[in-house]
Length: 143
Image (cartoon, rainbow, N blue to C red; front, side, top):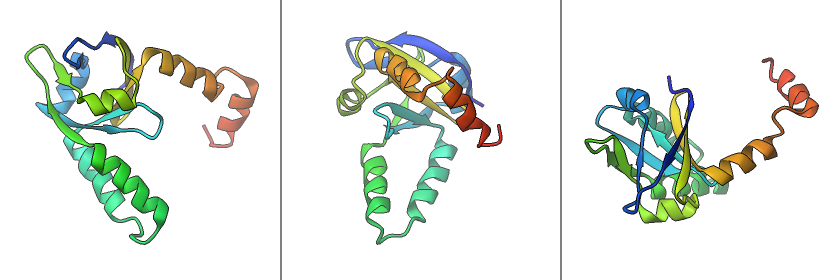
């Protein structure tokens, strides 16, 4: 299980350090792909397989299903970690997520997300966490 929030920076070569406690469960490598929220998602290989099967089982003639599959699969790249626990994030993925120097790496149960620090702050505000409306909305989820 991936939990926690960690501040890291991207070096001049486009590498970001993945926290050791996350790498333990990722093994030697993982899959990085775009998220629909202008961030990146790191999938353990088994979790990527699960996601790929779900996408492959979507209705093949549904335009939104095809668009989602294309979006996710076309952006995916397999990465390995160097001896310092860094993964090289391709330029196109860094551009998409607008990753600059300062990033936030967060655990989200079965996957990991990488956010530009400022985008993460904006996402937290946009979600409304800490407001009465948010509290009422999540009560409907049964949490």
